[in-house]
Length: 81
Image (tube, rainbow, N blue to C red):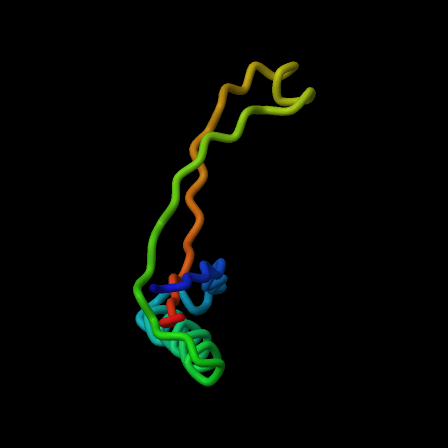
């Protein structure tokens, strides 16, 4: 049987990093996340992007804003139990 853990992952690159160094920055951060969990006994399963609908709050309703889709990245890890 497997036990899973899902960890939020936001690479959070800056505008300056968004050129070709952006890919290096993102991969380095993801690698650090994976290595940290592997040291705790987890195995990396993969990366997923999850979409959700966010409804506007009170001020958004006043300005006639509609719902918007927001994407969140998560890294999935598992271990045998």
